[in-house]
Each structure stands twice: as C-alpha cells, then as structure tokens.
Length: 326
Image (cartoon, rainbow, N blue to C red; front, side, top):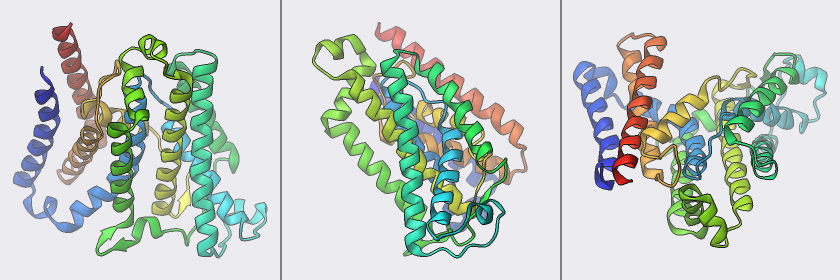
C-alpha cells in the first residue's frame, strides 16, 4: 500500500459513509442542524485527537485522556466557582452560584492547566522511569478517574451559567467548531513545518537514531504528553459547557474513539507516520458513522462492534503496508 493509497482510503471511507446515510436518511442526515450537531460533537474528540496524533506518531499511546477529561472538568468548575467567593459547602451542595465572564475564563484556563499538569506527569514518568506508555497511562487512567469521583463524593459540580462554549456561535458556526478548526490548523502546522514536528516523526520512526542525531528525546516526549494533556483540558471545558456541569463519569471510553480516529486517519500504531488531515477525517468518519447509526435507531452496542471492526481493519492494513515496505 503506497502513500497515496493510505491517504485516499480514509477519505474514501468517509465519502462512502456520508453517501450511504444520505441515501438512507436524506431528510434527517443532510439537514443543517444535524450536520452542525455532528461537528459540535466532533469538537471534543477532535481536539484531543490532535494531541493524540503527536503521541501515536512518536510511537506512544495515552489511555488516560477520558479520565483526564473528567478530572479537568471538575478542576475547572471548582476554580470558576471558587473564584466567585463561594464556599466549598455551597459548591459541593450544587447551589446556584452566579458566574462572571472573568470567573468562567479563569475556570477554563484552570481546566487547561490541570490537563497540562496531568500530561506532564504522564510524560515525566514515561521518560524518567523508562516505562512503557501503555502501562503508565493505564495506571494514571485509574488515578485520574478516582480523583474525579473523590472530588465531590461522586457528585457533579453545577456550573449552570457556563454554556457559551457549547451554545455560542459566530456567524452561525458553533464556537466549539471554530476552536476545533483553530487547534487543527495550529497543530497541523506544528507537525508539518516545525522542528518539533520533525522530531516527533523521527522519534516514532526510530528512537535510538533520533537520540544519536542529537534530539532531546526525553524533552520532546514530555512536551508531547503535556500538550496532549492541555488539549484534553480544553476539550473538558467544552464538554463541561455542553452539560452545564462537571461530571466525574465524563469521558468513559473516550480514549477508544480518540485512538480509533487517529489510527483510522492513517497514523501508524508503531509510530513514525500520520497527519493532522488524516486525524480530522478519522474523527469525522467515526462521528458521522455514529450519527447515521443513531438516526437508523441502531443501538450503541452495535456501534461499538462496528467501530472495533474498523480499528482492526485499519491496523491490519497498516501492518500489511509495513511488511511490504520491509
């Protein structure tokens, strides 16, 4: 499988899915409201997937992003509520607390910072202790989820006024979609045109060669996980805005959709290959697939089976391509 075919296959699959749902449910699927709804729902996964692209290209993986999203949402909500002078008793009791624009901005930044801290912890443990990313993030996935439930004894933090990132629009386009576009453009540029992006590819292709070429492998990997954490924190605040509350159960199985989108979009699980354009296609493919299955009243359990099957096909195709190249 050559480079052109690898890039064409995800795009062709997306076109096929869109065409199929258009044929089966033309009135519902092609409505402006439905398309905008799919794009809005793609924003959370797409923002996290932008960071996960760097992680997987560097031959890593982050299983903690779902749990991290829940914890960041809790941290950001507490910060914006506490910034208004509310007591923890009022915050934990779910009392209505009026929020100013400054409070909400502060809470959003706190959520992003919490994500960056979590990502830095992941990256530091991986690089300093020389542990496999799978093992480290599997452990922090449990830790972050546990902290989310302990924060308020398993109950959510209510932030009723915090909804702009979900319902806000600019010239009819949802704010969350504009944020997703900005993130994809920025990190796509970083990946393709900056030394940081080139180092990410080099580390994924052969970490020893990258090290002997003078690349500070520890520093780059730590930054990759830190940036992924920050993007997860941003996505967490969009999710919190959507629900008008921070749920400790938020992001359950989110890592499945994010990793699936990146791999389906053409990133190699063994590292060294991938693109932000492919990741966007993977995110849209999964979300349009879910949307169409929902419109056809097909259960979420069946959706999981379909997505799992697509992941296996994508990984198999990558493996065959690697073997042919070898």
